[in-house]
Image 1 (cartoon, rainbow, N blue to C red):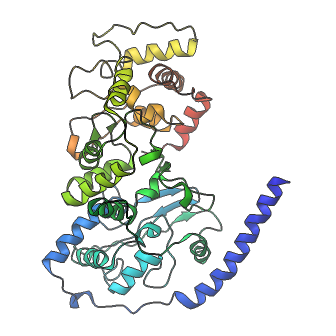
Image 2: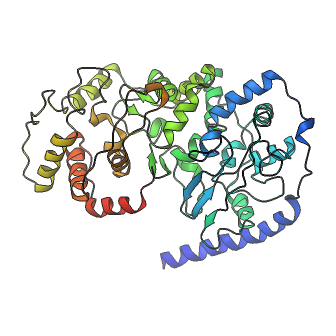
Image 3: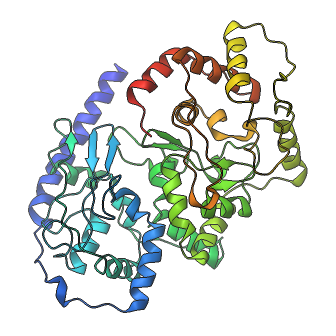
Amino acid sequence: MRTLNRVLGYLLVAGIATAGAALWWATSTAELEAIDPSTLSFSDDDIERGEQLAKIGDCSACHTAPGGNELAGGFGLPTPFGTIYSTNITPDPDTGIGSWSYEAFARAMKEGVDREGNHLYPAFPYDSFAKTKDDDLQAIYAYLMSQPAVASPNQPNELRFPFGFRPLLAGWKLLFLDTSPFEADGSLDEEQNHGAYLATSLGHCGACHSPRNGFGAVIATRMFEGGEAEGWLAPPLGSHSISPVTWEIDDYADYLFDGWSEYHGIAGGPMTAVADHLYDADEDDVFAMAAWLAAITPAQSEEEREAAIAAAVVLDWPAVEGTLFEENITDPLLLAGRDVFAAKCSKCHKERISSKQPISLGLSFAVRAETPQNLLNVVRFGIAPPYGVSDRKMEAVALSDGELAALAAYVRWHFTDEQAWTDLESTVAAHVESAIH
């Protein structure tokens, strides 16, 4: 009965949304007049500031296909509804946004409607960009319209029925799109509020670091509780962090600028591109974001911090190659995993005698997360490090499915006190079929 009521509730909501969407579609998505981009002119200051803000927004990461021209689109974004391909946002008048006025650009950023009046999919995070100030949007527009035009037709999305029917998005917006402006928090100082603004608008941190509902919308009441992006788990932030060592402002700053923190590890997956862009972004902006993140993260006493670090360090394997960690293991799966770790992992993941070594695995989110998704990704695909720490590359490790399952079981058991991951063999098999890197 509870399931039936839930289904009926979804149908009722969908019916109301569809009716509202039909009205909205008819009244608010008119095509806007095309412009001649050759008539535009912008100040050098606006273009420079727009470039800095575009780095905060990570624009080129999503709007550049692997091996493709920058900002020319074609990057495939996997979603539960199919694959959505990013669009060309160079100023080409035929295939890009060269014919878009600022009004058209701002409407797309804040309302998710393109110049022709088509609703955009929220894989383009306009639900975050809606909070962006007009002055900042104008600067980004100046930057984008000043870049080289690239003629590159947009690639059609690959969505399951009925999600390719764009008018449905109008209903989605009625239910989930909040276009109210950013509001400063009186408990934060000016720098922290600036960081909050950047992180929750252009930075769209919540788009990855928050869970989504069955309609693909960020659950507003669970902001920053952790999410998923491009096949990777995005860790919870601030007060929701599961790190045994609390993130302090310097940890956040190091991670945002370089993609590496001495007590939290290295950026991987889609966060690598974010760190690469922030590496070249305005320092004041990035430090402001770090200040805000530190402000929403509960403090940890120095004694507690040192104890958490020590608890992780004591689990590091011996620095002498070939020496096993002394522990009593009887479970055959864990024994097999220990042998894999000794043969394939302990050369690097051992007692730290140099700051160039990886962090203690007991501090790693990949090992402590609710599922082994990130650990499987790292082992199978390795880590191509961010620019700021280019010497911290990890090569992929060639393992059979059984070896990988055993390794995951051992690493979880040895380096944490968290509940064991279950059904690892089927999880590893599913990962092979659907992995994204």
